[in-house]
Amino acid sequence: MFGKLFHYSFDALLISILLASIHKSSGLTFNTNEFNSMDIRHLLNRYLALGEASYDYLVSSLRRSGYFTQRRIRNVDDLKDSVKKNVGDIVDSIGR
Image (cartoon, rainbow, N blue to C red; front, top):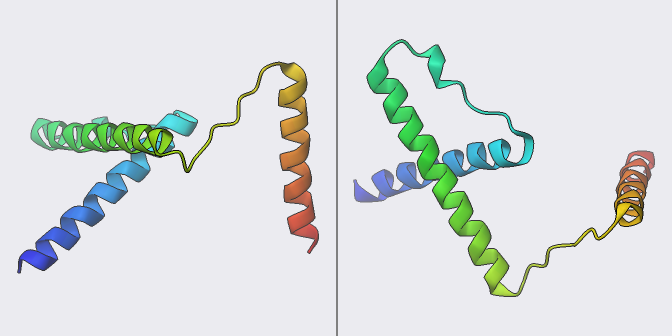
């Protein structure tokens, strides 16, 4: 009983974190205004806020861990080089 409840709660949290990461990386947001009930809107907004807070906590924990590094772009040339490399990697993977 409690195992399933924990499992479903954890899955719901992961989905909320996924929605938060989509929001942070692309700016796309789940539109809660499509729901007529104010109670459902409020519940969904709190659910999405939980995902945002969990995502922020997860990212800050990963930054502190030392296992992950963030690549710094110092100037326009670094940006151009990064785009060329990433596009080249994508083209190479498609050609395989």
